[in-house]
Length: 395
Image (cartoon, rainbow, N blue to C red):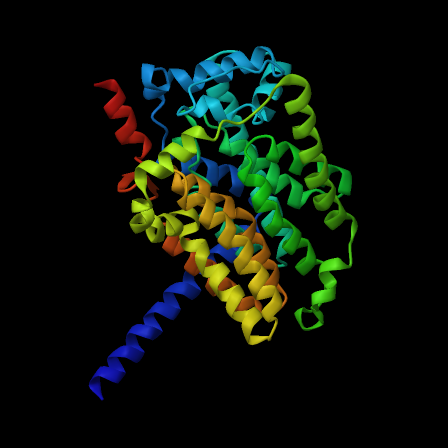
């Protein structure tokens, strides 16, 4: 009996702490321009707690990636053969960042690193704005925006300094979900696909987001609504068709191709041994945001929307399968990004404001755990905060 009283006492303390944090957040978001400043503050938090190893970017082991990027920035249509095992062999159709860089006169390593940093800030601004659009409560939007600063999606520069541009893929995916006019949704998604092909797979979740958002009440959700197209859903479908059309054209006319030899050799070498790291790698893709996804799936199943729960799991499952098949599992898992917003739409339509606040706070608390990066058969690394990185680079 004493144990029960203790449990109740501890539960009461936890609830009071949660209510205190939520109350302070509610007071914060009422301040003028608070919701404008919070995304920028989240970007600062991201860089403070997970700062890229920029000193490594200029070392010889990174040259094969950056040399290809710099060459492509001068002439996007120049098809070059690279070592099939290198990352450079995969960038032929990933020309959005280099195309934009070329148009802006960016042709050096340092300039591209700055370009990535600017893209990260814009990404946080768009994420914050999308959260505000999808939920009616700024407290929830604030908590979730801050949570993004502590997961890989917000710490993506710690991977991108290697000559990757996932920050641009995430940016254009979020911009596509946020865009009002359907033509902008179409263009942003297309830019995301030509930044990384994983964004094309992730767009299936963007489509589901638009399906969920198109209905006032989740109880009205029927399988036929997958085919009741609004302008944004048509924009997603059109982006798929145009992407493959452009890709086919570039292959036949300019000789563009992605060499799959490196991937097949890698899979043959690992022989599925990296499956042991897959569960942890899957966690690192979204970390605390898995709470949103899991609760949303539970809601769909509880509401007997089995077909949509299945399609939701299928869309995520394809991304997870692809991620397990490559070395960089965490950065591939992070393309589950649209699932965060699709889940939030489901919860916004079914949960009370109080419940949503508790869920959002739970997401933030879990995300405060350090960001880990998983890849290969057993490689796990942690992103280091700015003070440690500066100290290391000064040595």
